[in-house]
Amino acid sequence: MISRWSIAAVILGLLAIAVFGSRHIVKSSGMSTVQTDRSPLALPLERPRIVVRKAARRLDLYSGDKLLRTYKAGLGFSPIADKKQEGDGATPEGEFYVFVKNNKSAYYLSLGISYPNAEDADRGLRDGLINRAQYRAITEAIRNKTAPPQYTSLAA
Image (cartoon, rainbow, N blue to C red):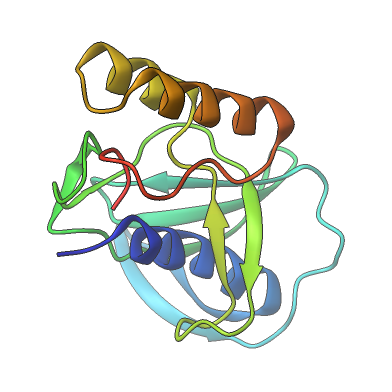
C-alpha cells in the first residue's frame, strides 16, 4: 500500500530535485529522453509552481509562466484516478502548498503537501469518510496554511 506520505514524498521530492538540479526530460521529435542536468536553477523562482500530468507521468516545474524543467513522475498503483480515501493507491489532484520539509526522510529532500485540501474535506464529510471535527480541523489548517490532519480516512 502506498501512503499519502509516500505520494507527497514522490511528488514534492521531485520538486525539490527540480530546484536543486538532477535529471530532466527533454522533448525531442515526439520522444521523451532523459538528460542529466546538474546545474542548479537560478533562485529564487518567481511564483514557483509544479504541475503533475498524471496520464503522462510527468512533473513540470514553472517559474511564473515559464516552463523550466520536466521530470518523470512516479505515481501510486492507481495513478490516473483522484485520491478518494485511504488505501486507494490514487494520486491526489488539486492545488496544494508545502507545509514541511523533511530533512530526515529516506527520500531526497521530501516535502509534505497540504493533502487533504478543502475540496477533499467537503467530499469526505459528504461521503461519511470523516466526521465534523476532522472536517473543521482540515479546513482550519487550509485557511491558516498549516498542516492538515494527516491521519484520517482520506489520507494514507
